[in-house]
Length: 260
Image 1 (cartoon, rainbow, N blue to C red):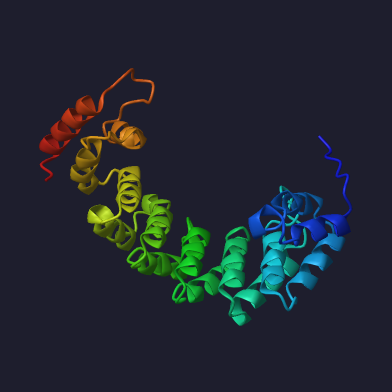
Image 2: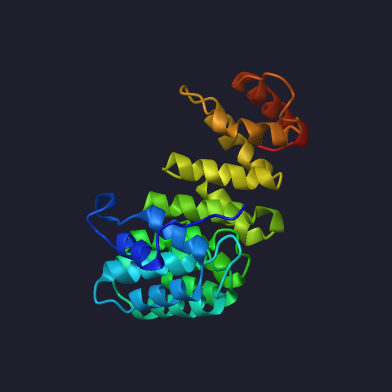
């Protein structure tokens, strides 16, 4: 289906950078339209934004370049070069955040190296964006950065980094599993859950005690029921199973394997 855009590129850029809209964030619907249009005109307008004196404009330029031409990407080399330049030379945290997110949408080893260098930024929001952007990348630099970020003092950063490592769990990399195992007793619940998901994805029984604890929480944790069923090799359509049923099955699994 061909999508017809009724506003010109000039109009879209104007509202995308109108900070009186969207609670100071501009019109994100216009950003999405610019992504879809993806022409050289949009590229050039976004590149112009990356040189703006206003950091909000530079960040918006990165927002546009990160997904230019979706779903069929356009001008990936130009987009990558501009975003890497921002990530490398800018100092504003909002710009660095936007650049990291954009690099997450531009899967290229050159972007991975840049993100790895950004993992030590002193602003937690930038580190969180880096963790998001590196998710699922198996390059040694990406793995090392995610492992560092999984031990971050800020819970939200640890959660995203642990999620990213969980996406790599099936690679059978000992350092990835070890990093996930360290997060099983994390003070942050969501980080613990991401560690459980990652380890169960590769059948690592070290996740079972933490999974049992999570399933037994008074509030109930239905989000981890699929992980329990996967370890027990039960199809999701197995019928209605309570958390107590799955806990009993997991305990039997641990006993049968001699695990603790």
